[in-house]
Length: 116
Image (cartoon, rainbow, N blue to C red; front, side, top):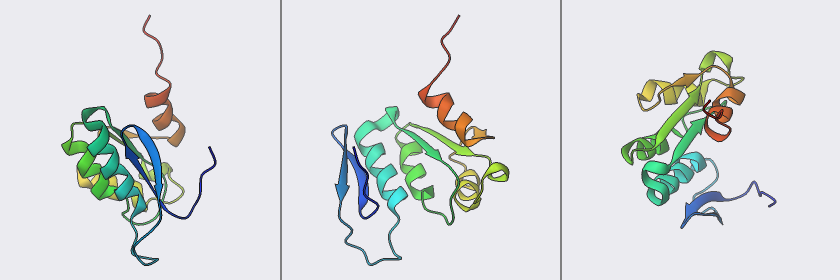
């Protein structure tokens, strides 16, 4: 699948969909929109991971995932190249745990170690 940078990604019926933007440039919060759609579609099976980025995009979406009973993770702002998004996520109170490195964050969710 080839990803386009213009548009907002959403989840519906377990499928990743691209919606063309309706908001003027500069007023879009694509990560919030994506995470809200994820929470609505997947409920307590949703997993949200906030990594390096600027601003607060993603924080409102985390509230939706948290409210649906999903798992909310964030990179430690100290290890992020851009700390705005992870800082906002951590300060929101919806994140547990805060993970030190982006790769560990994704690895913990996607590639869990098998139980021995």
